Image 1 (cartoon, rainbow, N blue to C red):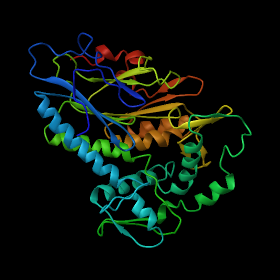
Image 2: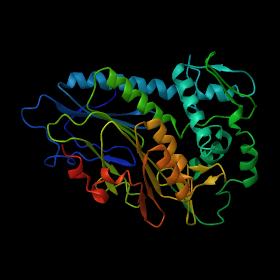
Image 3: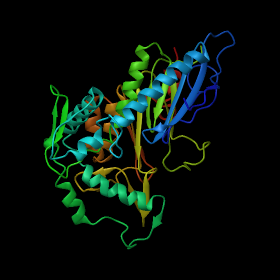
Image 4: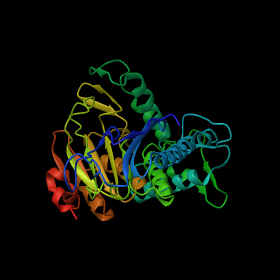
Length: 377
């Protein structure tokens, strides 16, 4: 495995989240007592889901941690190939295979892909199409523009800086979710109309992270955290004899993202929960004062500009990944009502720097809720 195992090292968790090793019950620093039988290890790899996957956990030996890390790595690699919409792999029917067969024939797929697509389609329908996995043709147009101009600051009127409205509307004609046919008995997926394409970017990494975390937990790895590109899954509390929860720093979207020492917006203390953040500050370019980022509102076919970032905390990372995108494109009052109905905890960061969060989230937050004492046992 092309990864480096470290003992008791600080860990940066993805673009939007930071593990805070000194937070929680007891003294800062997170260093295990001298007589503990568990040691904290961390590792990361870069070759799946086009992001950094990071693992931190407590085991009795490095060899035990390495075994779990290798299993996690291989499982992420398998799921990354299945959920890939850009590349083909020998012997693998994946999202790209389904898209290439649009309007031609159903594609038999592995259970992990069938179940993820069923999960995603169900959530699309439950939320009234606020996120739509059938919007591949529209999202592909935006993807090409971000690839072309990523990281650039363009002026208003810059030639070809934004896609043509008519092209977006034409692509959107092929975004009918009802024409995504999932046959669970035959294990097939069929896009009924030629020109259709799936895009599962709003759910795939979160779904995979939860699946992998649940599987490795059942295999015996209990005290750990996995971060997959803004999707964090935590399991049992750290086995350091000190802390009763994991401290997850929520990225401030206004901070210097290249500075590892920049302050977090807040810290959430969680265990056996997922923490998922969506934001406009990673995959983007600017045109004038507009952030042209990757979260596209199906109602406008344009990047949503209501928030700079949004964090969802709940029991399932797949649902959290989906909802972080869904709530990002919804009006605040409507989104807050949905969050409370579903029982998830949410933090919104507005373009003017205002922060709002559900009442249920406050007890978990350090700055806004005084969570350090609340989580001591």
